[in-house]
Image (cartoon, rainbow over all chains, first blue to last red; front, top):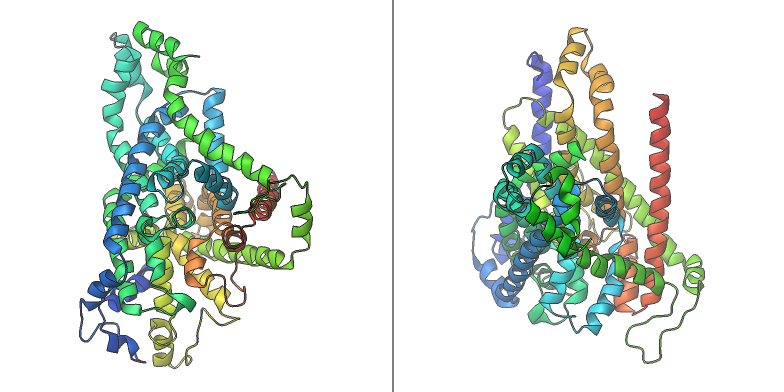
Length: 279
Length: 308
């Protein structure tokens, strides 16, 4: 739009865009820069953007100091289980929410909205007590149970948008042709939903991979902890941190989410758009 | 409705899906409904009940009902109300500038600019990063000696640098800036989605009528964007008020409690001091106050909508 925008306005727009780019990018660039700096450069009082003697030593030291591989494994198990379970149980409900106007769909929609407002402390204390009685404290399965329910609202929100994008007429045509309701779902609707389901699963994966609060409360022993919790161990007591390994480990922990996000970015924004337009 | 009728419907295959989905509903809904009830709605009610007890961790004698005693104690707990005030300052301080910045970015991204793809990609990055990493990253930026912020200030002669996160006066503003940065993507994406729904024909018609950019924004863009803007600011306010990980990593609530958000306070109360009942009462107060504030927000906007 606005193809007739005049020169000075355009220039101003580019200047503004540049400011945004700098504001958004510089913290990440600084993290990367710090991760590759040797100790003596980090101790210098005049830090530079580009490391003069880039090193991988910080990464090696990070793996030596904290059990990063085990933590990443725990995170991976938790995030994968959450992603799979969340979409398996959310997709049928999302289908009902998208296709019916009953009290049930309204209640589910209400829960999706209201659950956004819970302060987690009101949820985590009873969950902690319940999981403790079930002996699921300090266990990744216990954490996954919490993650599944916690990722459901947004998963439902996305999936409802994707279901609505499948024309109901297609399903009606199938049933006119004599396909049963289950067959219509399996052979007509489900294939069309697959891209949306995959995007939702990946989003649930990222939220679980990144989550901190529940993991902090529920996982006590170091060998069970997930990556975000282990990262905070680098901060040490009194916040005195070994900057190089801290930056290196933080950068590594971000890479999987950045990759996944790059893949599904369009679908997430598309899902939000669909939810916003059609709800 | 039982699963038997659901299968019966499925077998008969005569129902039109759009209407008949209700018949298979329970069969489709239970897998999600049970976890929601058991792990979300149930614990929430349990949590509210706990607020009226003296529940503590690691205590041998049984938990007792103590009525509203926790709430009476909270009324006189000045530390809690300090943290509550800090939470409000933080939530408003993040939500309002973030909305303004995100609106500007969304308007830019809606234009036909070169490098738009780069800005879109970058704008989404904070969303993909774990909050813990965002906190660590900004600690490196704010670091007194090795941080880029102080180095830039020294280089440009604008100042000689300070300990941003440990200074009594600077800690809260410093974490607010991080909060603004971290939440930019969701707000920008939501506003961009709203913008792309505004009918462009209206824009062009207004431009032909000689309306300037500001006038077009006020009369065409904003009215169409308002529902999205209202929803996203309300959600952002709640999310920010309830936030935890970012500030936990940045300052742990310090210095001297200057950045101790209500969630950090309640977390310490529950999991450091084991005061489950008392912390649950804090959660209840947080929910109640947020609901009241949001109700006023919504009612105010609705009334404004009636006038316009």
